[in-house]
Length: 138
Image (cartoon, rainbow, N blue to C red; front, side, top):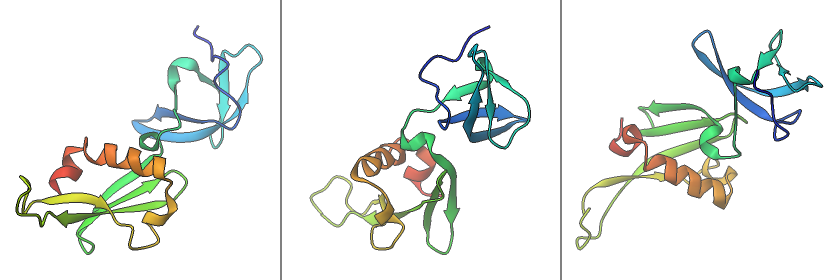
């Protein structure tokens, strides 16, 4: 049986699948043998093969990505319930190869975009530009 290494600590977020649903929860307890853990909100113990360690990256913190018709953009909800709004900005520079094309951009004109750090903003932009659904709109 594979053990939980020392990088797993009580209070860390872990990701696991149960009944075809992805869950992100905190470790409540680690058994002294490090063969299994208990997770907040769930009964029983989980083995190492059931659980994925989450890196402290923004894409691991994404709980929900949803298109919002009224805003004409995407709403990204993080596991800590912060919300990020993605709007589409038109390229106005006629010398740009992407002239007249719309590009996704974090909306920083409202309170949603102000709750993220510069590092998180870089990671979100990386996520946006590698996610075809967001990149292409709807």
